[in-house]
Image (cartoon, rainbow, N blue to C red):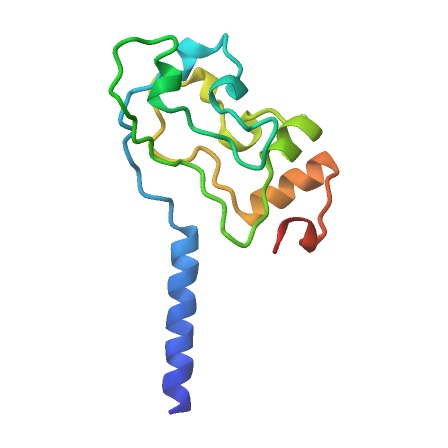
Length: 146
């Protein structure tokens, strides 16, 4: 019985490690949005909330229609970057207070001519801690974890 439990535990742990290390599946955005054509516009213009709130918004069709006339009534954007639910992340804290460039976490989106198929920077505890150490930010667990 004990041997079976140990084998099950080892199998589950191996599967979790494999899933964590595996690259995320590629996806396709509903519109081939060229960030490179929009370089004159700051990220925070379209991604409202990035400078003022915990979450950055994804623009809806009505917002895009202010400049573009031939759009569908709604755009079902696919969320690219995901933060685990146990992590407290604030765009405002990183963008406005720490003055980090969006590319620090999202990669060089300004140069993209077509949407990305996966997140350019995989946000893991290792990548976050590496940046915190580089920038001299807090490494206290309670600062980011619930």
